[in-house]
Length: 455
Image 1 (cartoon, rainbow, N blue to C red):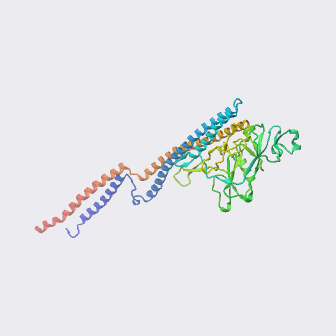
Image 2: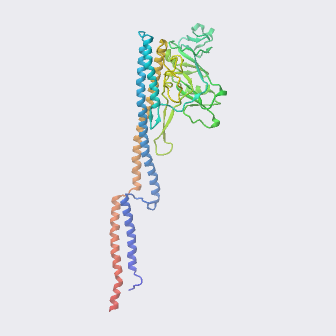
Image 3: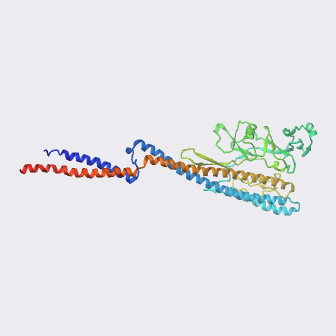
């Protein structure tokens, strides 16, 4: 028997340390509910679980983002519902003004309500916001470039008859006179430019001629609008185009750009012949819709982050729906519109705008057609917003399912099996108590030496 080294006590102490360490690990896992509390618990599992945790949290936030996007679209669409109501009222008033039982003074009273409705459409477009962000005001205005578009005639798509500008005014021509007048059908070469009248009642298709801006004087950032489409000039030497309009590089051919656009996606109301002539797709006053103006308001793109990773965006394109963009106002004196400014456009927009005119008999029919186009444009915009909303609702559902599945996978790796860990805790707890008791017994062994000494 030896007393300098109590080997049984050392063995008991070692077992106690091991059991106590195992017991502490079980307590940590049971307390946190996590199988991996530090990298030492599972090196590979820790790395995988952190990646999955990143995805789960990203999916959760993306879901919230998508729901915010739905709220934004609902806000914009709700305002457009009011715009639709105002346009319907304007059309009703225009139909009323077209009745021959009303005199000039009666139509002037109708004109007052129409002017206020147009101004209110501008107010709605300007003030519709979500989180202080304008939704229906478009992007930053594009400055004038010197572009012009002028009405030069009208032509029939059936017999070739129509009206052309002979330099002194519009005159009719017949099929048998085509060769003599140098006119050869829809691809006619019209002579003269006459921009002081609108063919609001003709039965043919209106024809317009474009005068491009002087290439030597074009400024980067300037542009124009054709059939509601914004075009903007940029210089490739200064970097790639970053705007939201249809880009035109300073050195590119304008005719080529317009031809490509006319082919796809195409202008809504006019056909481009590849040189400088635009022909209306519809006859009568519908074909005389204000085709173009200098300057533009491009749409604004709002990116909604709908994924857990970078660049997983849904681009929502929202264009301006001011009276100018809808064709309800134009510079004073434009045929079909008033002779003086009477429309409240708003900050950052040309204030000298005149609304549709229903005091002159010919202009009334143009106003009806212009309002029809405005209704169609608002309807198309609302349809687009409805499609965005439906898409985002499906996105929300998909993100919810993805988050659920990813969380389940994360749980398999990271979470503690509470039943199994409780069994382990019970085992190590018993062993710890047993080791403690045996250590006490081992420490009593040297006392037996005293019996030998006493003997």
